[in-house]
Image 1 (cartoon, one colour):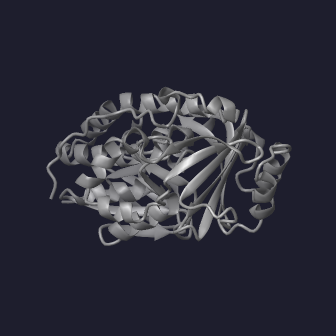
Image 2 (cartoon, rainbow, N blue to C red):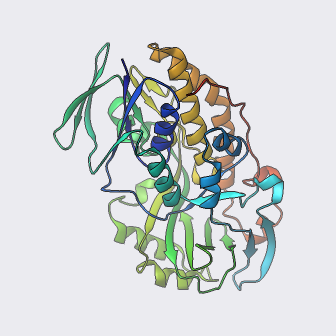
Length: 382
């Protein structure tokens, strides 16, 4: 008999878990996603160190590399656009501030969906509103009115996980703000960047532009001081007003970026935060990726944690058979030290959205080039 698994969230962690479970016999997977479809674009996410090894094991290396942004490097600039320093994608073995494997979040999500659509059932435009755990099952009620029973439920629904809130308690008990708010949106490549990124920082603030899609387009990042209590996550107009208010006097290309913000087809806004929980599982419910252990966007390790966590969780579930408790414990034990290192780095690198002059002096331990390693277990797969 197959183990019925419900995965909540279809961004990165959910689909990669569906892929990893499909490598083992005996799992029937459903992925539910609140949004009506996959969200395009978004920020660039990275795979570094052990994540690069893992995608080879999972047979995804060629497809992911083909979808990369191909950004060759990054220059830090002052408010007049003068270059202060630069980093190449080849620095630190491809694991520097600009990673060798860098892909837009939306592109990676679409790739993983296409890879797994034949292996799992996807339901968009719905979400879980009630979970009732029994000794041998989880009874689930969806917003659509549908009621179903699963053996296991996985919360892979991000930093503000609804699954976590239902089972573990309110967000404020587990989410730690790091003092920055970050917006990502698409802009024209008016600087004619050639596979390059420009970054301007002023203490507590940052702005960046990178070219994408063979230089035909670009994406922008703006970071300002703030915490999640400063804004309503449903009020996009209010988020944009907050950005405009808190970027006053930044200089460089920031006024132009603000003028383009309302024209953007894709706009993301979120706090730079972390998730800290004493345990990632409760009964038959387990958390994965940012829902369990978000290290903050500044860590550069969120995608690594999602991939590696999914690989280990799937492998331990397959190895443990019917003993999900043993699998959950092993998954957490194998991941905890790795996550702790990434979270320390995420907190440290959130502090400087620094003056460019300071950024020029960062050593390797204060850049995204610090890669906290983990030994990937070997699991028998189909």
